[in-house]
Length: 131
Image (cartoon, rainbow, N blue to C red):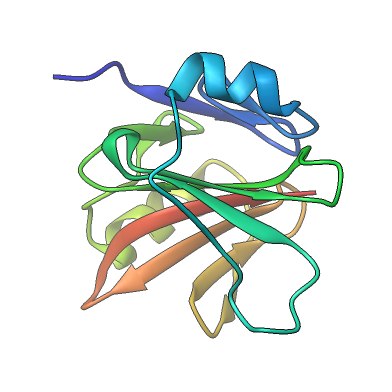
């Protein structure tokens, strides 16, 4: 079982931090499996590290501006395991922890933390952190 990662709002998921430079994330994750853009006119690239279940969104200087982590990796936020869990259960637990989420196309967004919970078939498939 891989190490569980924790979200630090507006800052990091596990060892990956917003603002991290290319040499730092490559040292942690190894060489990427692919690089792409969500749309042909997108300003940021996404660097996929599929073996680590991670995608990093980077700016033109290749510094991290977004971190996406996917199941089955374990990611905790406010003491709650997120990935692979039913959205309703996680939403209720995070609400009890004092966090507010609003619906967005992908799932639920917590503005004060910079966190999006990505929902697929009623469960959390991924988590994204942006600033």
